[in-house]
Length: 436
Image 1 (cartoon, helix red, strand yellow):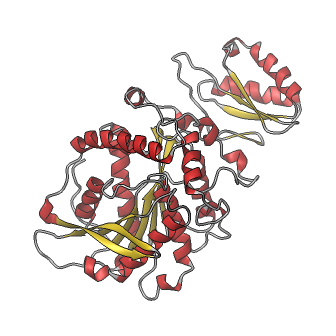
Image 2: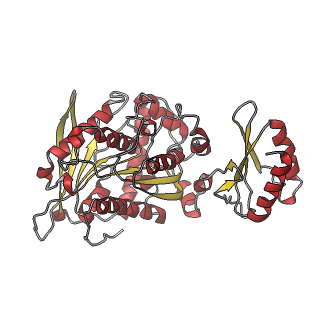
Image 3: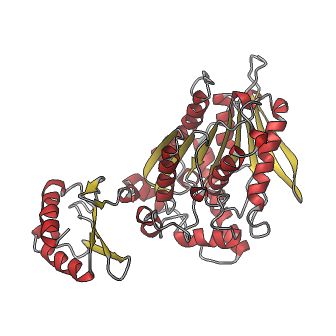
């Protein structure tokens, strides 16, 4: 596209989409960008000194991101295509609401240390304080409606703890329930067995589903692939001991996780697909995967064909709770094989035959764009998918921003995502909705 054609195209877009537009133009040279930026600045509305932002991609190409700054100080971004040039589709999702901005102002600064123990201590301290607040916004079901038990299960080279949640309805009707194996987040580097206790109790009660919550061994003491292998052993243990949990995988077997747990859950879905142990004929196949803000590819090995779609690491590099530097700290502790599909599920040679997937994506999260991409790849491979997206929401916001309306929606969607996966497998959930 020559500069004249580009000028006509942009002039039309600017006129038509002024309050809708953030778009990306690939200019053939730095000189072309400078020339065209000067032309744009002759338009009165484009006098804002911070209007233009550039990022060099190669010696001969620059990506120019034009972000109109609207009068109230916010930024509104247009989705779609500009001619043959790709628009930044998801950057607008990083813009927080006033409610989120107010809540973020109360959060502590991100942890800045490479010492594993100091890093973990700081992270856990932040979670402890937020969980204390979180409890005030969540109502647990009555204790006599479910049975919660801590168990120790053997794994290769050691043992790990799991919490099991089994419905015990007051009507004492003996029933067989579906299964949900949950892997909590923590950057593969720390474990809190009861991190999601309130939420899992609610799901167990409301959806009448037996749950196994896994606490795998953690990095740096136990780096990749130990956490993956631990969770895989826990998944097999769950299937083998389903009757003790008043459950059957034939009713439904969902694997799920948050953040690093979502990364492991996606890896387990791939691994189980190719393992005869999880055969459909025997009623042991995984029937759904729930991926909550998962990491699905190592940021240093993104294939060239995907790089134009993965911009959130740069855009959200200073995001609260999980800035990009903290993600790299976790990777330093974990030491994964970046090319292995057990760490980078996006790089699997095939995604065909995977179970249906429900994804939750936070807008202000370095992992945002890879989550969108993974959903696209799954869908193109014939996998049934569903996703919910939360504009301006941060990674782990359900832990750090308790009580916000968007957090309540996020947690309710989590419940509905499991319900959806169960219904796809033919299991109707008729329990009454729980209080939020």
